[in-house]
Length: 276
Image (cartoon, rainbow, N blue to C red; front, top):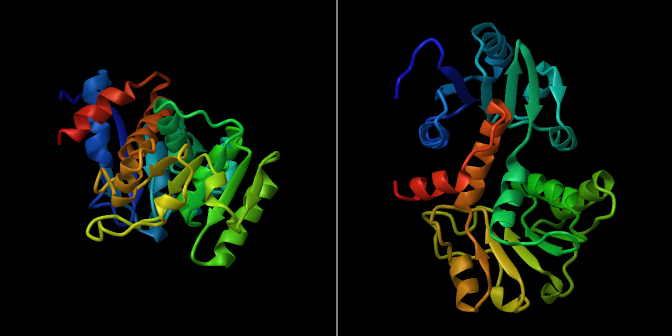
């Protein structure tokens, strides 16, 4: 990869960033999609966030991704937010245009694009969401914007389920958000938004797939392993499944589309990344 004065600079900021896959994904995509760019992961401590963003402006860094612990704190340093970032109150992507920083959130949209590319129609569908953390929140808001009819937030702590359901109802019109699960067979889509089943505890599952309808689509945001036990059991039952790695890739490449204002061939990047 040739790097010169015309090469666009992009980076991830967070603390820690050492185990992030973002540099590998973005630099692979730049190569495959013919983008003259270079991407780094930079550790930025919370007390240095404002100064770091001053550096982004001063150095002309074209775009950044934002991870923990800065996703919320960064809002006060930005000049503008898009709709989803405003609804979520959190940012994972920033575009720099002549020193003006605009914040976006591609977390939920990355999952929506994964479902779309897997042939899943969302409008009017009923969704069983397993978990009530940050990933659930982002995905729920995006699904609501896509026109699902109902979201049931199912979490081991009912207080958290209730809080997220109430937030969804207050922010997205036309979506029925509930936190008490009556009959799992009523749902068209079941999504694991927890870390249950992630390496090394690969034998665990977040929900009994035998309780789901035979028409239910089962998705998992966990991507290590690629085929979780939850998905394996759903597939053994004959249910359509959606693996989580595509969400990670989509979140990253949606950022690139924002930065470069061009379409990125996501499927090509996903297939190449799987070989690594």
